[in-house]
Length: 106
Image (cartoon, rainbow, N blue to C red; front, side, top):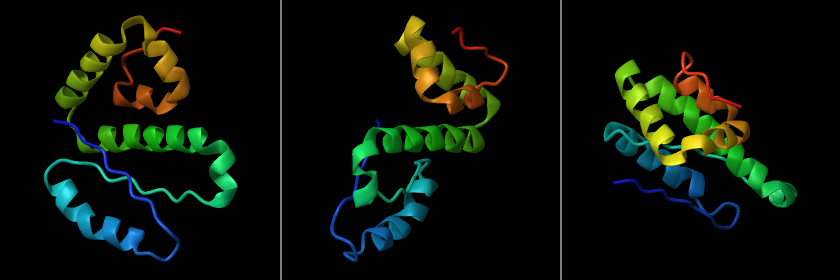
């Protein structure tokens, strides 16, 4: 089962405190927590901010999984994206970090 949670709210409302309080529990069950602050200035480029977050997630996955687990993850990506994996890799260059010996066709 996969889930994602996004937290939003006004400045000073305690969002960071909530994230920091749940991070140990999420990590303990094998989940990932990525924190990123969006401000009024970044509103015009919010998609690039989201892509950056997923790029960071690729590195977290690489660092917290064994070679066997990474192979399974990459195999699943290939199964799901097929020939479009190169499109994903162009958006998320860090996806290559999941399996450096596997070269994603361009």
